Length: 119
Length: 374
Image (cartoon, rainbow over all chains, first blue to last red; front, top):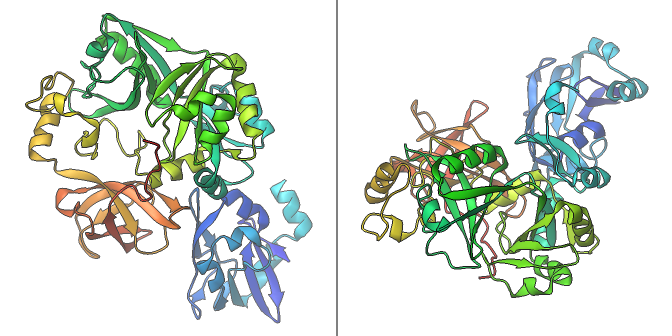
């Protein structure tokens, strides 16, 4: 698993990256009430705002951690946003992206690094 | 921690909030619990299903004494205070000369004096306003009492274990009662749309009183986050968001709060600040109105969302003043002001959410019916 400073996690599955938000981020957001995901087939660039997530507190944007193409999105969290609080690093992944450039991964943190980052 | 943090005031229950695991935030000059470990959504639902305990000690408690305090207070509020029976409470407004709202408040008749509860963010200004205009009254600020709200269908059962007479009170009754926690000032009211009580208790007893309630199975502590979604589902205004000095009682759809006797043709017509404009709006209507708004999608429309008549109109017709997800109605809800032509229930308009025009329908409030014990 890799982690970004934007509190996203990335997990490689057969050359594709599954992306979600960390348990720490989910806890900070509070109860999630709305998720808007990108379209399957969208070509996205790193740092594009591709997900909108609204909690009981406020709206936040989730940035694409990589350049690439969106292969799959998790409609289950659109139908039931509270899943993001229940299982943020498992069942409640956001999207799967086929990376056209994996070099940003070198800058992302491992689990120990992320734990240190969130203090 | 910056200087701003150091200047924040704390209520007498601050240590208890921390012990309960509250997340504290600045609110109206106080460090207040926004949520406890249960979280906003579950705290909201718990209040609707059982009972929630809220620390509202940041609000201002004021006693007004004088020859005829009710008659005096009528000089600065458009309510009928003189007709308020002893042991009863009513919702009121301080208005300014332009007809705007300086604050909303609760007014209770306790026999030889009035007891007022005003908003935390306005209390200093309210007190100065009363002292300036009510020179024939003594304005006594109560600063040695906490204020706790116990709200929800189990509130009666819970409070009656400590104060048996609480169950005999009806909505908007007030009572002064001795108890194991000293003298309690109780009203059967609140700001959640639920049956419940607000209890003023001396600081020395406040923590024990809160602990006695929290020890009961039905009662959970509830933060400001859930207080906001509860009051919004109930269609109730948050001062500073939904009403302020730029909104009049008629624009704010608070006509019900102004009794007939103070309106045109009434026995004590006018005689409060801004009466000319406010009474003219009662007679002729206002150009805009506060309405309920139900977004058609799942995205909440937050405060500040600009409203338009159509998906491509250039000119705004209004703005959202409060918006959130309603845990009990299981959908997003908002309230805001729209031009009067768009204020009819069922009118579809559009809100600009992140650059996209999203459909939203004008709806009756409350979004969830109140369950007061009348």
